[in-house]
Image 1 (tube, rainbow, N blue to C red):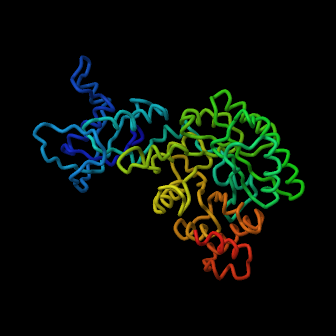
Image 2: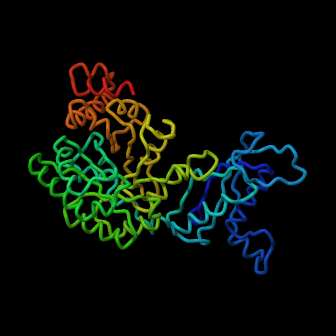
Length: 419
């Protein structure tokens, strides 16, 4: 087990399940469409992927995805689904995240034997933990820097996402910091645009955060979006560190796992991992990969925080999937580390109750844009309503009852509770 990677897949095929599994194992190890010189029995024994199990599921009369090959005698094909577990020898690729991904999620998706294929889990050997140290700060380190314990970090996102000139960041951040937020982040759409250069934005934001810390006795954690080419990303990180910042954000799928791992090697600040483009990888239930597998790769690469969506969000993901994603992040792996789930999208004070009831944790960063900024009493009352929502959730008091003596929460329920 400590010399192999085990990958679990959900598949659909009009062919026999055994044949489909054999094609998967062959394509991603020693096989090709025809025997070639050098393909000896000894080589195969040492390097071929093995089929560990095939668990047959239901059958369907039509394919989940187009493109599966049908033999001439398959006039009325049956599309069979199954859970397939394959074992790949570690010595085929070594403890390398890019090459791991090429193996377990490479050409498989293009094989014509399949009308659906999805990577749903990974079991990785200790060699990966030895090479990739994982999150540097994680949940406890983030809490220590932010000075928040025993409750979620309450945060928001700079809006509008794009278009704000650098000089507009100061007044906005001043308002948010004075409102009592724990955490603010750049939108993933804004990194180093010509209309608001990164260096100018960092200095404008940090100037206001330092002033707010002097007034309020609290330094708000701000995740600056440093996503860029590798050299630029390091310069961006170093500038944030130099100016006294406490967090950097990276778009994981834009820079790749190798890019995140490269950042982790020199980072001196928590890495806030944004998963934008994730929908393209997962929205089809018979294609791409599950978050269970994805978050393991992101953790190995070294993110300290990872977006999971929020319950009742504006996106297509179901609440049950979001809850499973939160729990995945909190499940220790390899070196025993976890990663801080980040909840966002259409969140407000009432979201705390449904989230806590389903996930039973306060180890989250809970981001609310409109749920804070559009509160009738202003951002400060919006922040307070979010805190009160979590207080009610943890104490398991009905939100309406808890709101009776708390006007901030009561107003949040009036405005957002109908949405």
